[in-house]
Image (cartoon, rainbow, N blue to C red; front, side):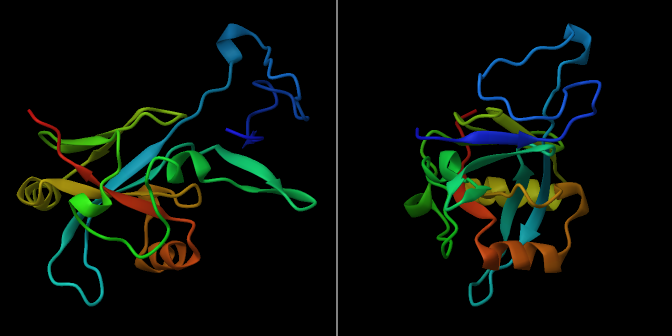
Length: 178
């Protein structure tokens, strides 16, 4: 897996500031830090492509980012997610670009992507009728992941900037069998 670290933000009472090389985290059980995630469903159109697609955008850790050594410092690492098939490049839709080990579910009022990647293995977003209809008709959804976006506050400009920068990676996740 290589060398990596997790940079996280916490209240001082939850975890003291400082570099921890040991891999051991201590604290009172009631004050242990937690990571939260957020996801949002939307209908997406790709320039130059017909039709619309159901897309779930996820930030897997709102208060933390995985980092890796880069030159004299550290850089955000998307490697655990790119290792399983999410891509920053031009996105293909459908089975040819499917993310191995991921399945989606379109339930009543929500969509869920289940992955085998840390920090969480399942991400759920509220979904309206248009998103759920598209996901069911197409047999899946586009799953986009970014540590820089808060899915609850998405704007077209922010999404476009993240997609162009390569900081939003994505892949096709097929609906699992009911």
